[in-house]
Image (tube, rainbow, N blue to C red; front, side, top):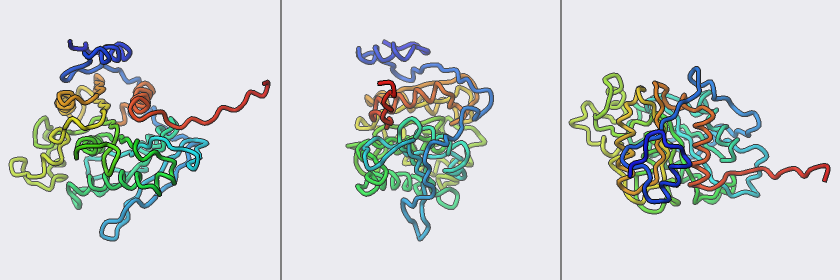
Length: 317
C-alpha cells in the first residue's frame, strides 16, 4: 500500500503501525506560511546562550560552538536529549551565530532541547572530509561524561539538525558508520532540510556544480574519489537512525536529491518522515511555525521529550 501525498500525519502514523506506511519517495505536501524568507525566525531572549565554547582543536586552531540552553534549565538536575545544529553555506561560508542559525539554536532550546550550533572547517581551504570530521568530533565531545554533565545531556540521545550544506553533513552523520547510534560520533535522530545528498554529479544544477567540486577537492566528478564518501545515500544501512527530511519542489537543490535518499533509507527499513513544500524556499527559510512544531514532535518521538520547567503551584490552592 502506498500512502498518498498529502496524507495527514495522524493517518500516516496509523498506516505505519499497520505496517503499510509511506514507501519509495512518497511525501506529505506542506504549505509554509511565510511571506518572506526568515520571517518566522527570531531569537528567544529567555534562552541562555554560551558563545564560543571550544569543542576541539585542529592544527592549533580552536573549533567553536554556541550552546543554547532552555529557559529555567538546571543542567545539574537534568538528563535530556541534545541537538547539534549544523549551518549551511555551500560548505564554504556561513556562521554558527548568524541571525538565522542563532534563531534555530534558540528555537530548539526554547522547545526544551539543549542545542549546540557548531563552526566547522570550510572549503576550499579545508575540503572534505575536514568539515564532516568536525561534526563528528562535536557529537563525540558532547557525549563525553564531562560535557554531558556540564550541559545536562543524556549522552545516548544526541540528535542533529542541518540545512543546505549543513543538511548534507547532518545526513552523513546519520548514515556514516554502522551499529549503535549512542556512541562516538553517531547520532540518534536526523533532521535534514534541503540538503544535497548525492555528490557524485547527479541531480545537480550548473551553478552549484563548481561549489560541490570545490568542497570535494576535485576538478571533475568522473575522477573524484571522495564523492561517494561525502554522499549520505552511499552510506545507508539498516542500523541508521530515524530521519526527518524537508525540501521544496523547485528550489536551488533539486528535489530529486531528497527523493532518492528517502527511497534508499526506506529500502533499508529506516523510519523516515518526508515533507515537500511547493515553491522555492530553501533550507531554514522553510521553518514556519507548523514545520517547527513537526520537527519538535519528531525529536520527541525519536529522542524523547526535552526539558519542561516545573509548573508553578497555583496561588489559590
